[in-house]
Image (cartoon, rainbow, N blue to C red; front, side):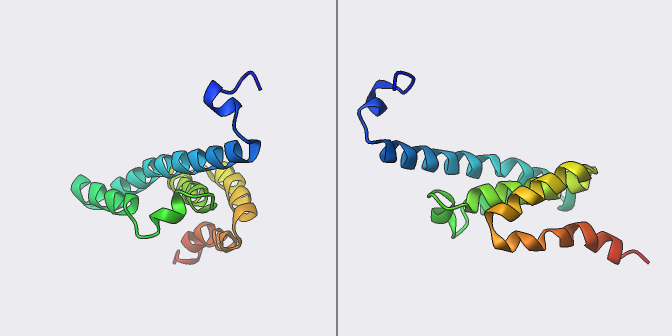
Length: 123
């Protein structure tokens, strides 16, 4: 495989897949901090509260599951992105991301509640 860096070209393809999956999980875990801080800034009273909430999200107790080959970090990224898009009015993109999230995890079937709840709470 000429496109792989030389240390990885001698490795077993399954090892490369595992390392790539872990790196992808790390990347998704880091990227999920952006929608988290944006949502926190929208809903919390001060930027200090938003920063504290985001830092607590970054060091959550389930962090080992976010850094391995589980779908936890990608699901977090998608869910927080969906919530941020709903806040900004990007409903079509939020629906597409919801469909992707539903293909990842079964508990994503509850995401449509985020779409319906604001309409149900209107007087």
